[in-house]
Image 1 (cartoon, rainbow, N blue to C red):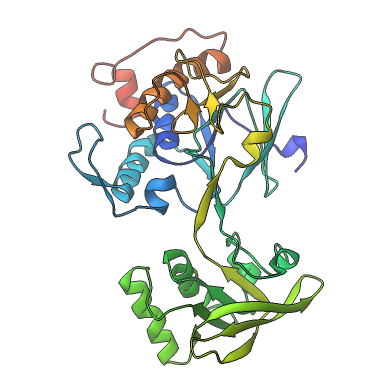
Image 2: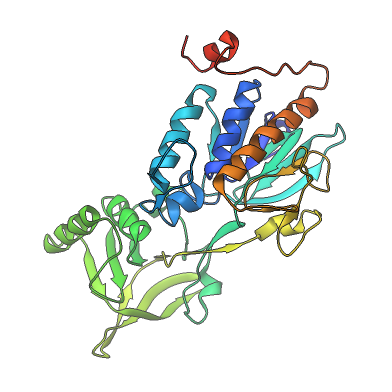
Length: 344
């Protein structure tokens, strides 16, 4: 994307977990527009991806709430501010522009420019776990994919999907109607996905609309990065090759600091030190909020991240709107804020 096509905004938020989402709210109250970049294909971060049904007991005013419920409530809260999301993308590199603003480029080629970057990436970026299959690196990005960015890419393909969680089952159900053939491979005949998704998958298998292999993937066959077959072995040690031209392994996610580690920021044990006045990093204009930051007395709690987001937003306004006066207002008494929130 050329510079002319870069998306210009007030704040780029790296991470769409609870803290990143609440930052949208605090920024929105100050009329600052936010774009969020997240490597996951949905909002919610760890809450939605790792424990969507796990109860959380320390969110003020909510005696108990699940990770998904909290995500849904935050999305409802920020709806008046219409944030823009860039999912399934990793914030890859940044550069300082002559006018003092920042340019951020994702691994999908999206270019964003803003005077402020707020890193709210939790413990870092979620990185897909690579299956222990010899030589898989040669196929990655060509015929082995760890996420689905455009479904049309897989139309009329012979697909193998590997895994037994929600991602594997969700994409099985979404891609089956457009694929030429689809085989789901899992090492056991039990799944961690939603029961309804499992039932729908089994119904497709019974109708002959797709195949289910209870086996382990043992190897890949192909040339020049293009798959021709996936080799599998079942528990009885019988082996076979499944013809395919694309493999989608969904074996879970692991946490890594990722490209942020190469942005020239001061680091402390893979965390980003910040001040406690505005939660700015060692680089002016780049802030870090939530579990990814470090300061004396830091508590890795969602409510701490909410507090950090509020103070970050105040500093972001001063940087994004240096010629405007910052007026602190309360949502309970400000008709101006209440209009923004759509309650008046």
